[in-house]
Image (cartoon, rainbow, N blue to C red):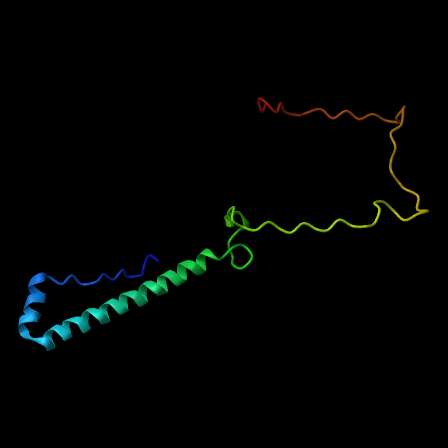
Length: 121
């Protein structure tokens, strides 16, 4: 948007309008046609800019290269998955392999911090 021109409607002074009026109907018609053509061109330019801005507003991380963090709060949340009708766990008859805690371990390994988290020393 930085390189786009922002065209403005020309300001017609009161004296110019009176001169066209005094010059006759053809001068008034010519003035109106000029203003109409200019106004239509500016409207067309603005409609193009509006369309670009609306399109940009519809983009999110799914349909552009924008990161997900830029989606904003208006982004629709994902639909949560349906809960399964199956019971959790393995098939009937399958033995589990969960490692159980023992009262007297074979070996104890103590891991000490090499640095203090508070003082970084």
